[in-house]
Structures are given as C-alpha cells and as structure tokens.
Amino acid sequence: MPNFHRTPDTFEKLTQMGDVTLYEPAGDAPISEKRSPKNASFLSGCISHVQTPTGAKPIMKTMMTTACERNCNYCVFRAGSTSTKRVTVTPDEMAGAFNQLEESGMVDGLFLSSGIIKGGATSQDKIIDTAEIVRKKYDYRGYIHLKIMPGADYDQLYRAMQIADRISINLEGPTEERLAALAPKKELSAELLEQLKRAHQIKRDNPYIRASIVTQFVVGAVGDTDLELLSLTDNLYNRLGLARTYYMGFNPVMGTPFENLTPTEEIRERRLYQASFLLRDYAWDVEDLPFLSHGNLRTDVDPKIAWADIHLRHHPIEIMTADREQLMRVPGIGPKGAEAILRARREATLTEIGQLAKLNIRAPQRLAPYVTLAGHKPPEQLSLF
Picture 1 (cartoon, helix red, strand yellow):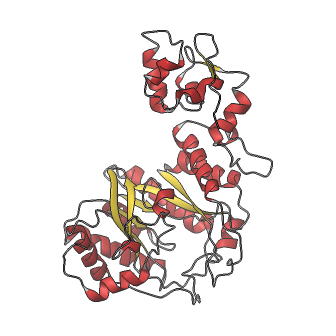
Picture 2 (cartoon, rainbow, N blue to C red):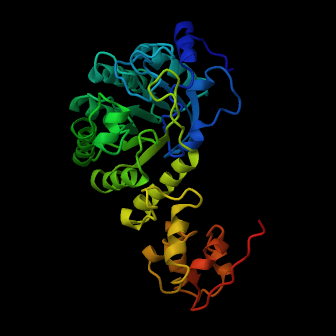
Picture 3 (tube, rainbow, N blue to C red):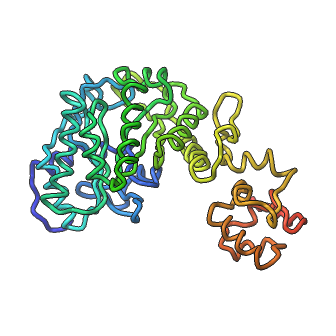
C-alpha cells in the first residue's frame, strides 16, 4: 500500500462499503468491470480498472451513502433491507479521500453514486458538492462520472454536466410496466426519460459542455425482452444522443423481494451490448436484428453472425462493389475495415482473403461464407473444433 496519511474514519467507511458499485459500470468495458481485482488489497472494493475515453484507468467507484428511502425490489440498498451496512460519507470526506488516493497514484478517476435520503435533490447536492471540491480545491482535471438521482432538478443536472466527463441517468426498465415491477417509486416517462431529454437539451444548447450521457437497464428480473430493451436503446441513440446504454444482468440479493429469482446469464448481457453497437455504430435498425419468436436474441452466436447466416450465406456481398454500409453488414468488417477496403480496391482488385488480412481486418477467414471477391467465392476453412 502506498505511504500516505489515512483519514481513519473516511477510509474505514469506504472499506465497509466495499464493492457497492460492482454492477454500476463507469467506463466503456462494463462486463470487465465486474471482475475481481487481480491484487485484492486495501480499498480494492472501491477501486476498479475502467476503460475511459482517454484510456484505461484505475478509478475510485463508490457511493455517498448506502442508505436509501426508495424500495427498488432488486436492490441491496432498498429501504428496510437488513442485509447491508448503512454508511454515509460527507462531501469533504469523500473529496479528501479521493485526493489522497489520486496523489498516491492508486486512482486516476472518480465514479460517484448514492442512495437517496431526504429526496433526490438533497442526495444530488452531495454528489455535486464532492465533485466541485475535487475540481476546485484539489484542482483535479481527470475523469469524473456522476450519477444523476431521480428527482434531481434542472440546475443540478446542468451543474453536473459542467463538471463531469460523463453523467448517468438510469432508466432500469424499458417500459412503464417493467419499471413499476423493478422500482415501484420511480416513473419512466415523467421522471427518468424527462431527465434524459433535459440533459440532451443542455448539451445541444451548450457546445462547451463535454459530458457524455449514458443510461443503464436491469436485465432479466421482470420478463423484459431484448426487443423492448433494444427498441428503447435505438430511440435513445437517435433522438437523445446517448453515448451508450449499459445492461446490468440481474443478480438476486438476499433480503429483497427478488431474492429467489434466477440470475441473468452474462452471455445475455454480451449479446445486448453487441446488438446495441450495431444500432449505434453500424447504422442498423431494430428491425434488422434477428430476434427469436419470444423477443430475445440468440445467445449461442453474436447477432451480426445470426443475421448474416440468414441473409448472406446464399446472397453474399461482393467486396469489390459493396458500399460502406453493405460492407459493415459482413461479420468481421467494422467501420475501419470498411474504409480500408474502399481505399484498397481503388488501387487493386481484391481477389483473395489474404489481401483482406493485410488491411488489418481481424480473422478475415470469418467473413469467407458471406462474401465474394471479384465474383468468386473464397474457400472456407473448416473448424478443427
């Protein structure tokens, strides 16, 4: 452990909290954030290695308080729960602890959430006050991700977006019915979606504000389908400019009404992320996604391959004539790969898979079943497994 002066009460509180934000992604590789740290040590529960827009960083992920007056049915911090220790840290304490960890080199970033006590606006004040102390008193200019509480007002949202690099407004459920089952005291349209609309308006009206906007869903506890989740996701990307959506697979917690429900498999989270990137980065429509009859995606194969098996095996895409969007329909070809192909074919005729490998397209053999090269079908390599 680095040699720095510990504020006993504050660090003891943080240690007692542990990994309270385990299922609260802060960066761009959310599934990996749930892994246990390689070297568990002092405060390891609230330090997570996160992929941020400026690279991978160890960041401090924690909460202002683990007490909460809301009664979300899946949450360990719900009102009346006896299965969690109630711990509260003041803004001065939290900012001071972060500063010591940052100066010691243990962290380079802050993710801050909170339970709700005395209303969302009061809890939001604590989060904002902490971030302001970190920015002003300690002159920290690195990555800060702040949660926006249900019930936070416009001025608080505006201020959070001024001082943070990213803000989260969690929707949790994709429909009013699903949210009511998850969190009886929250409202999807009037409360949470309205906050997202305000955040979008603030960002649109103030070009200097750099904070990206994200949201999170709880997946699999109340019968939600991938179609419901991805339909709202697509709407959020196209209409409100969200940077991304997070999908938290449900895990039952003892002492909650959902303690006996089945946990959601991680592979479902992964397929949702893959599909959401097709919507955000590949110009897909929700109707393009290969949903099964019950409204979920296949879990045995990623959605791009599932679509290609239906549409491209018997009608492959010609690499020499396809446009950028058509190329990106092919498994193994992303935006950069499509651009590389468009450049290369202006100078030469692409006739072999090996030529695609030289364009830095990863696993080019993967796309062989779905393309033709100058009118010829490339050979498919049989799997050894």
